[in-house]
Structure formats: structure tokens, C-alpha cells
Length: 115
Length: 109
Image (cartoon, rainbow over all chains, first blue to last red):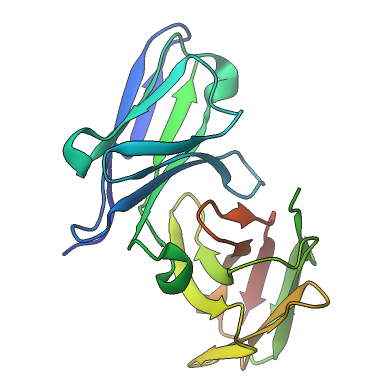
């Protein structure tokens, strides 16, 4: 297992375009999390899944953002009508069911730049 | 609402020094605390995970302690090396992690 994989690594898009990111968690991890990190800040929670069920969404996740995890495997995060304020690093993490006990593994992130 | 603070925000030291990085949190009802390392433009690498029932964890030159009652954790780095240069983040769980803003460490030869 090669850990948590995120694609693409970098994405540059024009304002108003839609973008989609993909996260492949560690295979035996049933929990998957999305975070957003802006320059000089710590990551902020966006949403998380247990299997295919989306259990919680942050208020940061406006209606332009949608996340899915079909079949409880990989997940996608889509941003519609991107704005310059969406420029950030988008991080994915996964964990075993008892995440609080085993900890979390993060991917390398997708850097989004909206021009 | 849980808030996590890290002090100092930045630290620059010569190689070989022993370091202490601080993390404080406002709500002591945590399940765990995890320390991460982040290199510029990269993702997070887990360093140490401390359960709420534990007082400390050690890995190599790293030692992390946890005092839930006072809402504090420290990360001790022994005999620092230039390769330790990175941003160090602490986060509290469970489920969704709440992160501090990090300590940016530079170790110069």
C-alpha cells in the first residue's frame, strides 16, 4: 500500500471554471477526510466520510463545493464556479474506524491556484 | 469551540540544540493529540500520536508530552539537525482534527 494518493498535485484554473480533485485512501481505511490549508495557516476541516456516507460538513463547505465517495473507496471533491479565494492546498486524510485511536494518514495534497 | 494555539510561530536555531515546541488547546475533552511535520508545499507527515489517557510518546529524537488538565502539549526535539527544518503542526481529535497554525522551524549548520 502506497499511502493516501491525491491527484492532481497541482491545478491552475481560471476563475469561474469547475475543478475536481481525487483522493485514494489507504485500502483498509474506511474513514476519509478533506481539509483545506491556506498559506501560513493550519489545515481546516471541510468534510468526512465513513464508507460512502458523508457524516459531517463544515460551514466552510459552501454550496459550490461537493464531495462524494461512491462505493466507499476513492473520493472526489468538486468546486464549481471557482473564485480566487478558493486558492489553497486541499488535503485528504484517511483512518481506520477508530481514527482517534490509530491516528490519521495524510496525502501530499492538491495545490489549487485560481487566476 | 476548540481552539489550538502553537508557540512560537517561528524558530531559528543552530544545529545540535535541543528544542521545545508548544501547543495549547482550550477544551480538555480531547480523544488524542497528534503532531505532524510539513515540508514546504507538501502534505503532512505524522510524527507522534498521544491518546488522551497517555502522558507521552517517544520516537527517536522526538518526545511529545500531553497534559490534558492544563490543555498543553510539548514536542521535544533532541540534538536538532538541518533536516529537521520544517513546519510542525499539532492537532486534536477525535474525528475531525482541529489544527494549530504551526511552528516554522529552521535549523542552520
